[in-house]
Length: 239
Image (cartoon, rainbow, N blue to C red; front, side, top):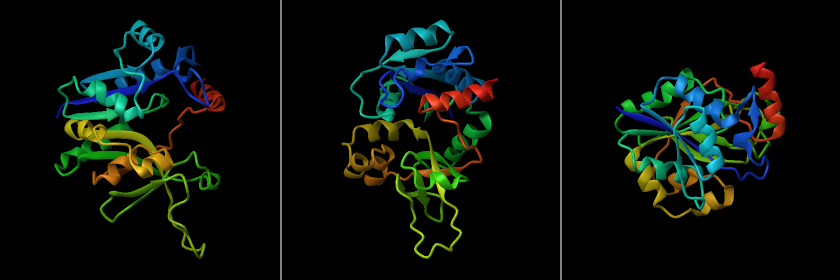
């Protein structure tokens, strides 16, 4: 089973402009992420997909592989698909460009889920340990069925605990996606769905169109870098 990891990266960001080029431990963030994914030794290819010549040059200068893409993509998965369309890999993994601490222990179970021929798309979830995250719309929650397939993703708290005494184990979605290549290419050909448009969550396009998402639970809490404050936290970890 041939697998490729594609890291989407764009300069435009409302909360953190030019985030991929922010310095972390003496290196650009996007370089850190590329190196972390390569270090897992799980992939036949690791490619940064970007609409920025500056990001392209940084990755190439660090010895990485990068490819220019359209600047018109509505989501990271659409950008990933543009690169994937030219690859022969069986499995495509979309690793977010702000996950410099991703490891083999996190990504291998995600890839292993495709040993089940029925799995077409998979992603990660982790228990919410911080109560403040429950009402944070920046933390995406996910609920699954008994077989571990996603029922819904939301920025709201789901499910709603009516009586407040269930002790429900809420799960947070970690935005790393894996696809069979053909499923990814079919996905991006679909129109943006109503739920995706409302929640601004691209994975809802899959659920709205009957593409099941196998959720793989992990202890990895992730230190995604969405703001300059997050970068400061990551800098302390690097040191």
